[in-house]
Image (cartoon, rainbow over all chains, first blue to last red; front, side):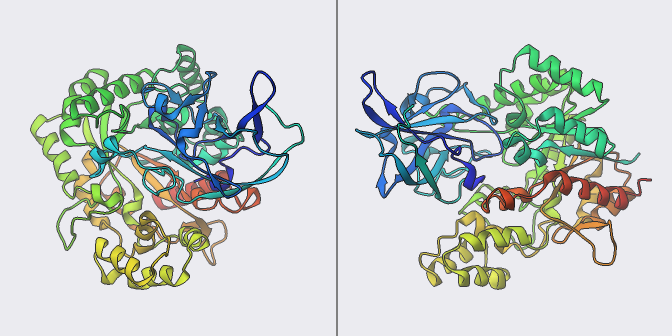
Length: 156
Length: 353
């Protein structure tokens, strides 16, 4: 759960390339479970920003002091841990980034943590649940809504 | 022979999340405020860089536990069968995972492991020689809605967490223990098995998120009339778009404990430690300073534990915070106070002076 606290306050910024052009936005997140997880289990986010959906393919995750990785890359990080105490950074690709000012973000975390074998295990290997679809939502039962402000010049 | 008090640091997960209490502060709270020594931990909550913590972490842990004269009772470990993502973990892989946990547990000075109720019995058997070698007992959790004794009118569920249910989990453990004659096999009952009604904090949480309050009322009033899967179907049919997750329907539908307190009697010799699950400790009317959880029977099971000569720890496991994290910072519950109240109750019911 930790529903209303998944996104770290005041963490919304734009991502800039070497020339200073905004290529997307980022925010810091915490884990919704009461325990950390193997990174391989982290299956992405349902992200809605101002009514626009940003699917997993546009997301990258930055954790453990390493460069941002796609969720496809994270699948093979079977022994690397996302520690319970740590915030990770979600990077979302969006040409031009977000405009300064208020933004509404809907978020649901997908982590394929389980308590053992379940009937849908084989199905999840072949077709991992889509974040936001309900399955694999881990400890986020609902899509939580966050009102965030991107400060003027709020680049990373 | 006595009931000893401890705390699962699960109880302080929220304080840890917000950086209010790190594990050292949690240990001090147990020693200095609760006046006891028992510590249970969640491996992936406390151990930084699990499953490969630094040597520094291990030394720091053992040293700090020694400084406050604490006892490392039980570590709770998990079974994430999707860890490798390209296949479902095999039972042999799961056994290797458990063996790794056993070695880590021993290194940290714990005497016991709590395995999840869904860990297959052959996985436990494969890990048993390692447990014996490292002198770590394996206790399988008995967690609601799993019964101590199979039978009755229970039916196999196919939806939600209940789909994983194995009604014979306890029997399997007792059979393995009998066959191997190994004292390293046992059980970790969770007091949630004596929960007889949904907690107010859970109902309130679900109400705040339910699109249709009538659906919530319907489950609360009619759960006893339907089977598990049947209830979910009826709710879907009567209240299309109700948006209540299956897990929440299960929690609302709880109307009787899944275990009888007297069922404890036969398993007392096999109990490794106990989870003192609770959601909401409130003051007992007319008894200032005395507390209870209104939806979980503690008095009767504790009486049976005393009569049966149980010698071990009940470790507080406060779970009510997770239902109160959707109302802003000011709506968060005080975990420290809740655990203190729980220990007032444990002391009183177990006759500790």
